Image 1 (cartoon, rainbow, N blue to C red):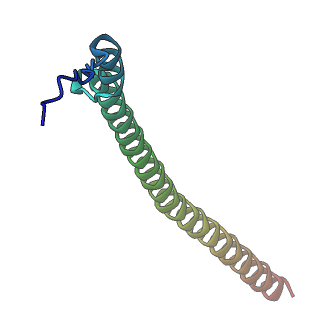
Image 2: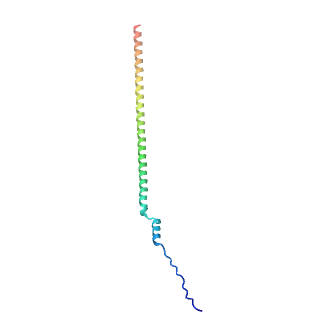
Image 3: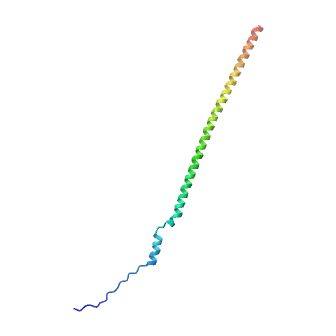
Length: 110
């Protein structure tokens, strides 16, 4: 038997390295690309927390002022009622005293 001197075709596999690099660079996830997004998200969260705290402080202050005004209002109303009662009692006492004096004078004159 005679050896066959046949040449086999050589297959050369070449990778498109330039194209692969561009695909890898667009697909790869790097922290540098997400850093501005993360910072923006943190800033939005901080802003929402600050606004929420300010709203809570304002609501608590308004409720406190309303309570103080209500307490002062109750004291003022009670004081006004007391003054009115004293005036009415005083006027009725003066009228009663006047009628007693008129009755006494009427008895003396008859």
